[in-house]
Length: 146
Image 1 (cartoon, rainbow, N blue to C red):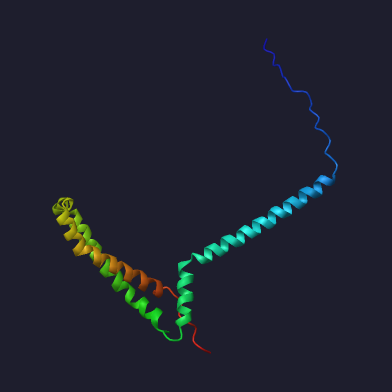
Image 2 (cartoon, rainbow, N blue to C red; image 1 turned 60 degrees about the vertical axis):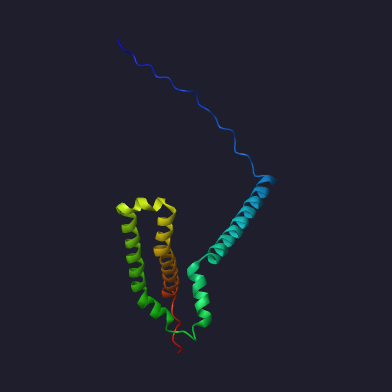
């Protein structure tokens, strides 16, 4: 004969909930202070984000001169694909050169200097132009006067 044995734990009584005391007002004050501190931290984080936002800085820079150069963002936007294409063509040329069998020659001081003379300055300057034109291309043009 199989008999099932059921074992249960004795009933556990939880202690009575404490009555509100003066400690609860201290807790509420502490929570309010924590919320105020979090709001202050959020404000500081937003200010830091705004200070490091490149687009906002370029927009402010352009807004100072927008009356004198109103067409500049549109022109930069129009020429940006050409500058990007030239940069990518140069990058392809550099990568082809590095991928070729002559890339081993870069181990010598003379070959490395020749490689940098041929590509280094052009690549750096074209990258700089691409960055500057790109920043101004993404600036919002001024609103036309009403």
